[in-house]
Image (cartoon, rainbow, N blue to C red; front, side, top):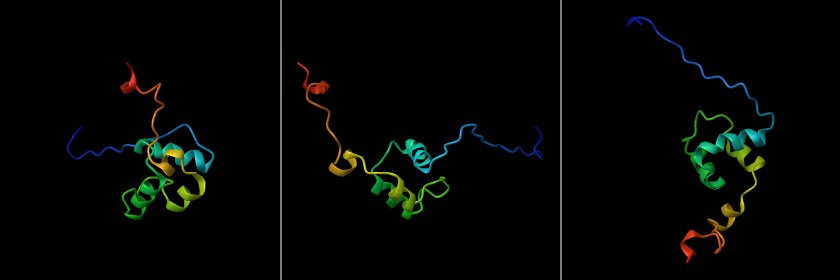
Length: 86
């Protein structure tokens, strides 16, 4: 490739997600599913500008808060917790 040539890179996806709720869940995966309020704060600070479907109104409308979002981080049951094994 010579220095005067330019290349165009395009990313294409062949799978479509027909419902807004599924689209939002898919787009939240790279963030390791933070609490909804944390993500809304990031949206208001314009940290997620350029991410499709990342709008505060859509998050509040289509995603219900998970139990761990409401009461803090959930703990594993004592019998499954590797720290409690004898």
